Image (cartoon, rainbow, N blue to C red; front, side, top):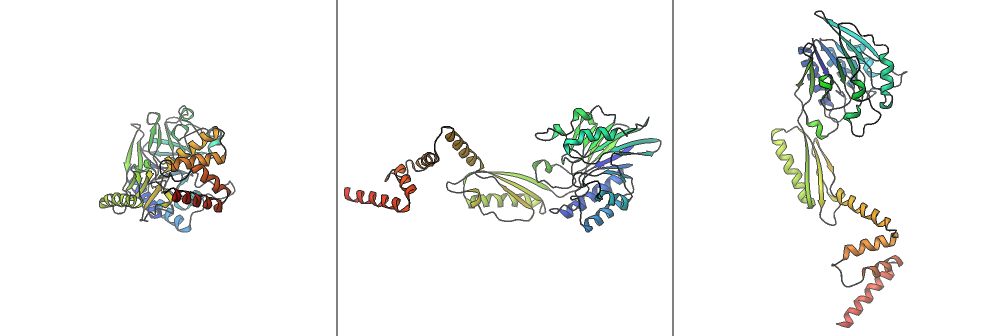
Length: 372
């Protein structure tokens, strides 16, 4: 039997709303043509209360599918127990099978696939909730057993701590474990653990430049094939500058955009700016042009700012006063550049007041003229 597996369509995602509908529709249409059973691992919608237009679009997309669809809800749809989940509405309207701490069995040609699903729960409760839910699971002899989840996994997320772990999942009595939530395509546990990734760009990260699509799993060979779908091109670019000015940065961005847009005029482009600016400039001084579907992260001078903070921390450890810190920084700034006056003396006069500082400079000027 062939099982199609997809997740995280995020229908109604505001930034790329049309893409969310189009690309989900392509996944379902292709999957229905190739698979006997379709599994959707959560985050069908982008919000807990989708717009009526989004609900209508979702119902239309799923109703057009002839193959049976089993699904769970994700963290974007999670609501309190006394409130209706939007996936419940979709399942009722489009005749889908919603699994929430429950299971269902699909049979075709004498082969049975048993699917048990648990919707998203807060990460710190995931292991406990899954253990409790699985107490209701009754393995059917001879059936291909599948578990469907929508959770983070400790080994796959930075700084993972309270999440489910592959070590916990591996010994569970399932032939296949399907997970959503993580927007990258991942295969683990010798092919037993699959994450299909999202069908639409949402996070503008480098990992999301990977193709969009779904897994097509063969229960006889126990192998998965990733099936790509047509989707809008996404580029993640990093531009590095050194002691750059406003015009240089703007020209660098423009040149990169022109090169990318020649072949992909409608592409989504994310650009990260890194490096240093000319002395006296801050990242906020750079006036960046706006372009459709272009998202720029300005990290210019971030390293130098970090270095300054580190120096300030070091100076504080030397038990210098705020006045000493400022004086040391001023002396460093004017070293070798200004010789007409003493930086420390001017600083002290500035602390006293602007009139005192002005009088100090006037006296220096007068003394200089008398010597000449």
